[in-house]
Image 1 (cartoon, rainbow, N blue to C red):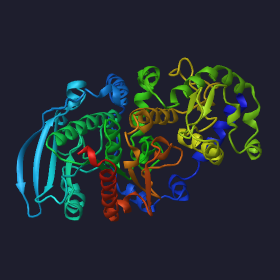
Image 2 (cartoon, helix red, strand yellow):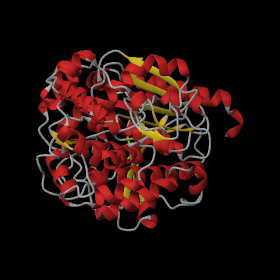
Image 3 (tube, rainbow, N blue to C red):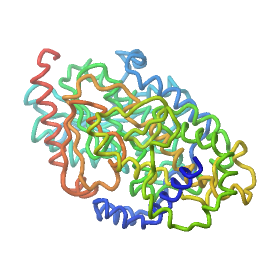
Length: 499
């Protein structure tokens, strides 16, 4: 066991020693994505993780909205939605509307006051071509107000296919942005989860309203973060519905731990809070599901005493790098009995990967690499958690405890997977109506080491574009729109009687 921990930390040291951006380029990601991210100087999560009591409430609520059967009655069929302004344009009518976010009724006080009133813009053609189709579009990162989606997506969709668009303003953006928030930089990690919970319920309220008003068929889409949020919303809808998530994937955890946006995270503040307030480590972790962080930390705690003593006495510290020339990979077979490795780079007690044997064999090496690189263990110079994790370091402990930075990354992965991983939510009613559009060299949304959407949603279609996240957003809007048209046509052919 001592040798295993030592091997684990040394392999991680070798991985972490690579230059961050050089490693991204070697993995085939877009240089434009990397360059664009370096131009943005704002930091994410400058306030930290968020209040522990808020995180607890959010995670408990996630367990409800993650099960479609449990939340059928959360938003009533006649939930009130209001139109307060109508403007006639040359090619369309633009209706401005609002309603109170259902999240405020279900989890009172969790939304900032500015975000309680949900605002939207409904853009409809002057003359309908066929039926009255409407696509709800959720906003991506930095997409404040409505002009961007209205110009790049909504108006072209009316002209090309006669599809109306309902543009919902995200909490923490535009009219709903808290006064103390700087531009698009969410202040707390918990804000992202509040946004997601609110958008799930608000999308349901709008879909019910559109049904009452006689619009059909209805669908959802979004780009980048908007794609994630649209995907979460559709998992909650009890009927077949077209879904087109663009430039998003199965979880946001990789976005903030291994993607280029991880460089914008205020890790110093997160590490400070994690170190000072033991509630995050001792209580919040216990609420996480699907993520192996809790089990990994428990395993480290379990063996910390014996490993610490063994490492203190071992001569391996004097052996230098020579043993690593003979053993360059982590032997996963030596992990404690009852643990298995999933393609989501986590340990799940008593579970085996949800993929077939051939897939396992092809990705075994990748999993070993991503286990180390995603969790970021830095080796023998760091400390293992002990029963008194905040005590002063000693010569015997400082060699084998994972660094605070590593623990913070692991915790980030855990909380992100808890609230954003599609495997933590119900599978959409008909996955054949889902068309995912992804960029092959996306540096913002890494796909390596996480479950694919095809594994979570069997039957969905994935279309890949050449290039990265930024180039796809700038130059491939027509591809996104075509995927929407295809999904709507597929729905009409398959469910003509649902009108």
